[in-house]
Structures are given as structure tokens and as C-alpha cells.
Amino acid sequence: MATIPAGSAAPVRRRPKDRKAQVERAAAAAFSASGYHAVGMDAIAAKVGISAAALYRHYPGKYDLFRAAVLNLGQQLVDATELTDAHSDADALHRLIHVLIDVTLANRDTGGLYRWQARYLRPPDQQHLIGQLKVVNRRIQKPLNAIRPRLSSPERWMISAALLSVIGSVVDHRVRMPDPQIRALLFDVGVRLLSVELPAPDDPLPPPPRRQLFSDAGVYEALLHSAMVLFNEHGYRETSMEQIASTVGLPASGVYRYFAGKGDILATVMRRAADRLSGELSAILGVDTEPRKVLTQLVDAYVATAFANPELAFVYYTERANLSPTDDGLLRNVQRSTIDSWVALLTAARPELTATPARFLVHAAMAVVVDVGRLVHSGSPPADCAHSQACVRRLMELTLFGF
Figure (cartoon, rainbow, N blue to C red):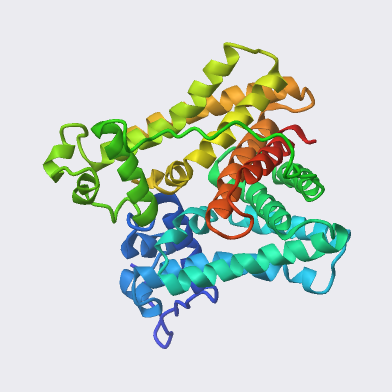
């Protein structure tokens, strides 16, 4: 056995200078992948190679670490966009797109945290994050307003939100492509979005919204509808079977006549969201087969349905971590099949695209509907109206088709 020579001191293990940043990155990755409730301090400590006791010396509890991880991601976006404080021209906008892409790619494994798990922040911290994102949006809008002064405030908000959504969409999937190609693709879409001409209020309106879940279509549908609303408002973990049952006048035991448990309800809601896409495709292909026309009709249907069911779209992204492995695998297969169909149509409509870039664009276009739709339904400008729906449809088309 090796011994320490007399007079020699044992080697001193020094804490890395960036240990706190390492901890927050590990926490962000864990929370983003598994959700806030499923991650423990022991797991985060193990990822960094320290004890849980050492972790508690820096953070009083899991929430404090969660808060730090989320707000750190928001602060990175704030810091990266400072350049528009001094410049308000097209060049500044282009540089802004580049830095936003860089920050997002650097956090691709963790960015889902602030996009989908921030709901678990306490109210003051939620307001802090909202403030950070408002700063970023306004820094995009400042040079945009200088270049396009005739845009209304709602239009500027839509465009800046769409830009952030397209760039941020890469954290929602794991499609691989070399970073330089991702940067070029996102930059091209970003520049086009900043120049988009949105529909005028008196332009033809899109199809009427189509709800997927109804509270007055029998007990089964009412339970699904109530669960979706509660999952959206409070989160899956915070919603009890008693709460779901009470909304339709049942005892908790009555729910088990229709569902095996709360997880079964969530899986059914998720499948309903996924099935609506594959069902729309089948219906449209039964009437038309020209790729661009089919995709355009799919866009119309996707936007109309998302606007009619904003809770369903949000729950679909925020609560997937709570699915069982089996249900999650089934959902991913359904989603992958639908995305494959959209990609095939897009590459047929745009022969210059190969499958992988087309897949990035499909994910980006779908993200625009969710993110800008959240802006519309949040009560922030722009107002929730049929014209907003037409604008989102235009943003989605531009993201897919490039014009």
C-alpha cells in the first residue's frame, strides 16, 4: 500500500471555482428531463459528485436550487441581449438572433426548464422570470420598431414571441444536426419572421376553433375536460382525484369506473392531443394530396384546434414527465409518426430541404402556435381574437414554407 512520505501533507482537494455553476447546470438538466417533483437533492448531488450535505450548504432546499436554475437561464437571455440597448438597426437585430441562438444551443439540454417547468416557481419568482422575458422581448422590439415603425404593439409582441419560440423550439426535441447548420437554419427563419407581413384585421378569417374536450358530453368526457383544466391550472402533482371527481359531482371512487388512476387520465388527455394531429392528416389526405395544399390545411386545423384548446396544448408539453414509461413511449411513437408525415409533406413541397432540417422546421412551427397562443391567452397584448389566430397561422406558414 502506498504511504505518504514523512513530512508530506496529504493532497488537498479543492472545490472547483465554478462548482455553483456546475450544480445549477446539473439541476437544470435533471429538472428539465424529469420535472420538478421527480428530482431529489441526492440525485443532483450525485451528478456533480458531491454529497447531499454539501449541496445543502449552498442551497437550503430543493426549491431554492430550482429557483436559481430557472432564473439563471432567464438571466442568460437578458445578458445576451444587452447589445440592443446601444444599437437599434438591422445589424443589431441580426446580431441579436445570433446571440439568442448561441445561448439556446449552449442550454439545449436544460432550456426546457424555464419553458415548461417554471409554473412551479412561487409567485414572486414567477414575476421575476416574467420580467426577464419581457426585457428580452422589448430588446427585440426596440430595433424592430426602429426598422418597421408602422407595426402595432400587438404585432411587435407576436413577432418577438415567434422569434424566441422558433429558436427555443430546439430544446423541445432531440433531433441532431451539426450546430453550424442549426444556426444557419434558425437564423434564416428568424430574419424572415422579423420581416413578416401579418394579416390585416379585415383579411379572411381562419376556420372556427374546434374543441377536443367538452364538459357537457357525458361523464367520461367531463372528467377528461375537468382534469385537463385542473392540470393546467395547478399541475398534475397538485391535482387530486377528489378534485377531479368533485367538478362533475362524483365521489373519488366514481372516477375509477372510467379510469384506472390519475396517470390513466393524464395518458388519455395526452393521447387525445396527439390523436387530433394524426386524425386531421387522415381526413385532409382523403380530399387532397398536393403536398403544399395538404400542409396548409394542416396548419389551419392545427392553429384552430390549438386556439380552441389552449389548456390541452400546454398540458401536453408541461406534464409529459409524469407519464409512465410505457405511456410516454407510446405517445412518442404517435408523435413521431405524425411528425414524419409532416416532414414528408414539407420535403415534397420544398425539394431543396432534406429530412433533418425539415424536422427542425416542423417542430419550430408547432412551437410557435403554443408559445404565441400562450401570449394571446395570457391577457398580454395582443388580444385574444380571430385576427390573432390568423396571425399565428401566418407565422406558422412562414416558418414552414419560408415565405
